Image (cartoon, rainbow, N blue to C red; front, top):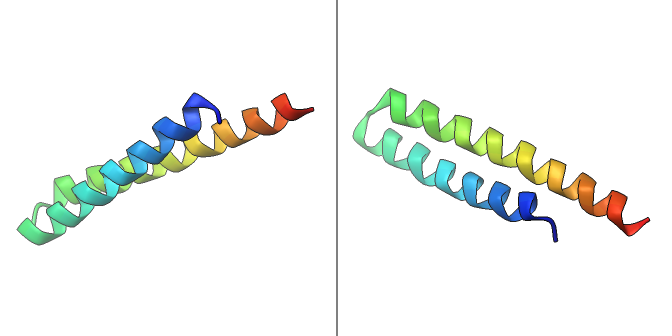
Length: 57
């Protein structure tokens, strides 16, 4: 498993938590940061998946 996949999953989890806290306390900035972290995590996870696929060949 590529390091990017692990870090991407961690960013997604962090983003989910930030987004939930932001919604709970009514902080639009924190909610937006959470959504951004989730997207960044998905992208990084996808890059890691691509690297895994390329390394298998």
